[in-house]
Length: 112
Length: 114
Image 1 (cartoon, rainbow over the protein chains, first blue to last red):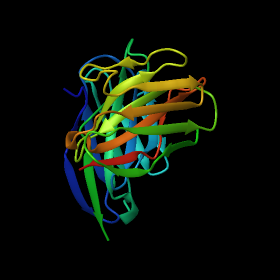
Image 2 (cartoon, each protein chain N blue to C red):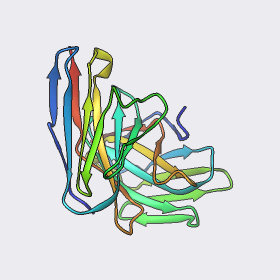
Image 3 (cartoon, rainbow over the protein chains, first blue to last red):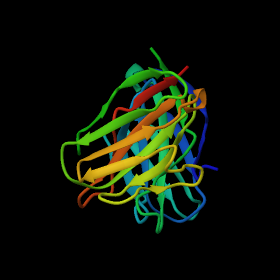
Image 4 (spheres, chains in turn brown, green):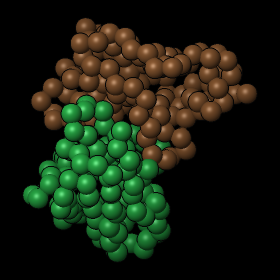
């Protein structure tokens, strides 16, 4: 089974609103990465947060990591129609050698 | 970040045939991987492509079905052999660059088996 699980599975919001999605995992990790995928295309790397970091920002994205709860969240502020996509978290477990385990993904629909 | 290309971008194949997917990176990378994304699903790791040696396969994936080559630090191929409709998926290669932790993905190859 996937190590990472995401919720919600789907999210529908209005343009300008914030979108928050969560990711949980089971084993100790080195890093957690978030990706965006538009309509079944390739994955776009959004942000990497290391296990010793608690929060990271990139533009309108804010990622948090709570290793005690084995969870992460991705916040997209002031969403745009172009943010409509599927978002995946992926973890590389300690001693797994960069191999990623993906969550199930959150499908985000931003309505104009 | 590395620029990754995949060929073909999509294909429709007959069952029982094989398809080889190429992954080319514009710079030397340490690690290369192949993932599969079945329709409506998340990504699953098929194998780690090792330069100059046999790939390391994940549970549920075998070399006879998914032979992989990696002759150098910038190129790898994945072959999907003796295809069946269940192999219809997007196949993606990914790389980890030198002195990096971020893993970047190619644009994917959308395979449909009829």
